[in-house]
Structures are given as C-alpha cells and as structure tokens.
Amino acid sequence: MRRLSLAIALTLSAATLATSSVVIAGETPAPDNAKAYFINLKDGDKVSSPVLIRFGLSGMGVAPSGTEAPNTGHHHLLIDAPALEGDALNEAIPVDAEHVHFGKGQTEASVNLSPGKHTLQLVLGDWSHIPHNKPVMSERISITVEPATQAKSP
Image (cartoon, rainbow, N blue to C red; front, side, top):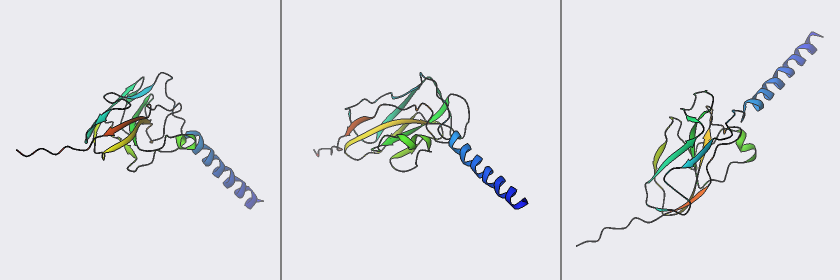
C-alpha cells in the first residue's frame, strides 16, 4: 500500500509540474493597447547595410530579460523568419541568426544584412523570452538592402 501511495504521489507531482509549466508558458499578460513597431523603417524601404533599426513600443515598458515586472518585456528581431504562431507563441523565442534577442533592453540596433530582400518583425518577449498573452508584435515588413556602391576612381 505504501508503494502504491508513493507511486500515486509521484505521478501527481509530475502531472502538477507539467501542468504548471503549461500554465506559465505564454501566460504573461499584455495590455490590450500594447503595440510594437518599427520607428524608422516601413514596408518597401530600400536601405544600405548595416541597417539601423529603431524599435518602438507603446502601452508597455522595456526591461532586460530576467526582469519579471508587470507590463514589461524586451525586443526580439525576426529576420527572414516565419511568423511566430500556434505553439511557438507559448515557447521561448529561439536564439539563432533569424531570431535576434535584445535582452539588455536595447531599443535599437545596427544590423548587417546581405544585399537583397529581407523580412523583419519585432516580437516582445517576457522575462523568459516567451511572447506575451496577447502577443505584442509588429507587422512583418519587407525591406530591400541595396548593394554597396564602389567609389569611383578619379
């Protein structure tokens, strides 16, 4: 009987832990009026590299990652990445060349991009890099990075 009770207790503990993780993930609330946007870029812009990108945020505040405070988060820049949707909105945003984290609370960055067309999107992450519930993200925009022109010799 004691073994059965221990087995039941362990099963319940594991189930509680799994449920807690699901409840916590993606459950950091965001105000309805929160909005992320690009300050200095718009869809269709032609730019040169490095590209200065200024991150806008209204209705919330910016805080470094790891700072668990209401109505705050930090920016993530998606470069040529698919939009986050479905289960990806309940998980930490990946760290790779397509998902650039600004966990120190940065609100702008100079980004080197190759010539050609690129898509950009801002996604605000909570203290643990998970999008808020209701996600705070900018529109996806497309920009074209023009090749560097070589200086003409005299």
